[in-house]
Length: 73
Image (cartoon, rainbow, N blue to C red; front, side, top):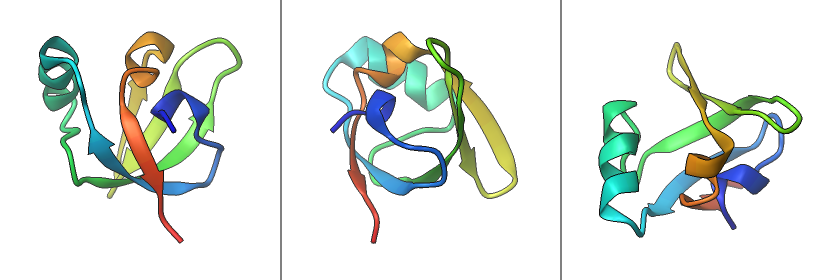
């Protein structure tokens, strides 16, 4: 599943970022493989707002569709 498919309130961890350019973009936001995050909000047709500790980050839908995640229980 990709980050673009996550639902509001779900916790997940980043499994794989396949593209080097996408990986670099994600790292600029503090997102790396193995990080545990939660979905704070999804704007319809817009960005996915993710939360890590007290930091909220808006990730564009195109970037989110290239980040592979796994839901946490």
